[in-house]
Amino acid sequence: MIRICMNLLAIVFLFLLSCSTGGDQPEYQPPSFKGIVYVQPVKADHVAVLNLANGETGRIGAGKSLGSISLSKSGNALDLFSVSGSVRRIDFVKHSRSKWRKVFRKPCSTATAGTGEILVTDSRRRRLYSYLPGNIKAHKEMKIARGTCGVSVSRDGKEIYLVNRLTSSIRIIRKDGFELLTDIRSAGNSIHKALIAPSGTELWVAEGNEFRKGKPYGVGFAKVDARPGGINIVSIRSGKVEDFIIVGGNVVDLAFSGDGRYAFALSSQMPEYDEASLTVINVKKRRVIKNYALCKTCHVWKGVDIPGAKAFVSSMQVDEKSRPEKITASMDMPFFSSRISGNSLIEPSSIK
Image (cartoon, rainbow, N blue to C red; front, side):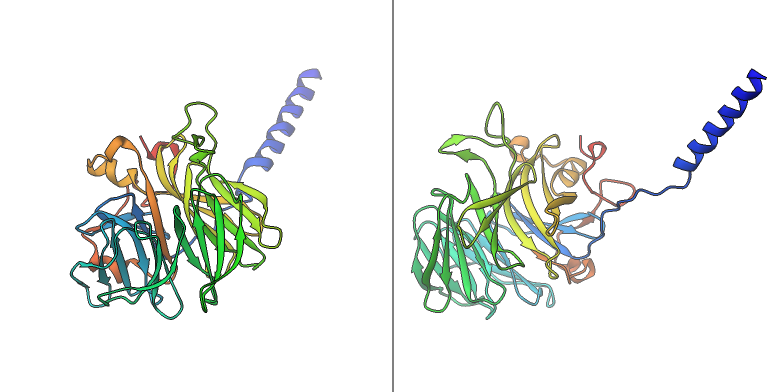
């Protein structure tokens, strides 16, 4: 009798176990994305290209060490800015490349305005310029303080956001007349870029956390208790940091999706992988939902060493409407995956 009861209990247990595990799918599946992301490695002579649909990466050769890149509003052209101040344009429609033209001294960051011109911060001349692609010269708009680099423009094109890495401050400028509207102090430790959020009431700030008060502080810099980078959420009204989203590594650039539901964060030195990555964040929930590997998935498998074995990136351009077939002819290395599945999303087994 006891044996029968034990057998019955075993059958019930196995039945319940099969019900709880058999055929069930995970409740959460990361959303899928489409589009192309252009990534600028630090002082590299190429642009890394990421296919958001499957994580495959490729590259566009530049011929010079680059400091920044800018994508036209149509997505049909990519403007390259070398660290020495030269500019060239890659046209994806005509499959052509312009000759290098010396325009600046040391471009640090760029942002495309609604009228087609590109705003450029020149850290050597300490000026903010507006530049129309193809022109011989750029127009001086205003002086900028030492340490000013990151520049972005509001979606309506009416405001400019300038980030000073030395003072960790953000200046909000009215584009019409280049008048100072707000000067936000203490916006972080080592900040790189500030974007107006879809809500219009806050700034999302790329916090690299490399240094704090002049001393090594973040991942890849501090020897002990290294802090991960992330996104500082700053209230425009109060000028204070009201929240922090941990991303990891050193976050250097940001972009929002067209519908405002997601944010894309570009980071160097992601912990554990020692890799640069593109991280996708749910804006409403302020949670990381996806990571893409950017550098080592290509370098390691192609046998090309990364200088210092560190994957550093500086800027990016996101084009959700573009597709691989549009830009393939302009690439000197086609899209490549380090995994049989064709998906180069970050996983411990994918990076050695």
